[in-house]
Image (cartoon, rainbow, N blue to C red):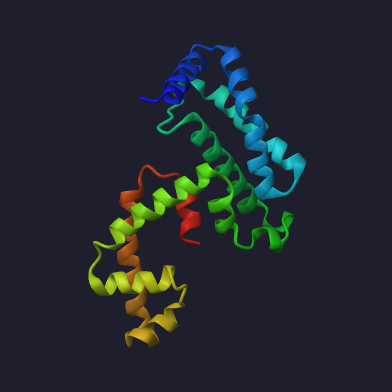
Length: 192
């Protein structure tokens, strides 16, 4: 087990024992990095600060039930991503179209942690996609990788649009269960 993982576990144990100093330490270690990450996605200082503040409040409130399967840093970055996604989902009008364009690409390339999470997700999905029946795999890849519409796929493969929809539905039914441990927002962004 790595030193960072051990340090993370000790901090989390201290949190669970109501140790406010552990929260302060986590805050001091990660606040600036998390703010920069949130700001790189939101481009608004005040909202970015609020996002980080809410995350630390929530961590303190939920400290008893805190279950972190990755590194503490990775967990915190994922929390930021969840909050940013919620903001975009709740108030799309508050942000310019320019900001929302290529949001999934921004998420992938913003930090080393997000790049790693995205690469892991992509590898996991590719492994599952490679197990799909050939036609189903082809339709799914044309839809997600080539970003073709159902009509374009049906024309290219000489099948009905209903068949395209059925193949994509089948692919997603097979892929989704394999992604149980990956945060929903990251999965959502992958499939944008």
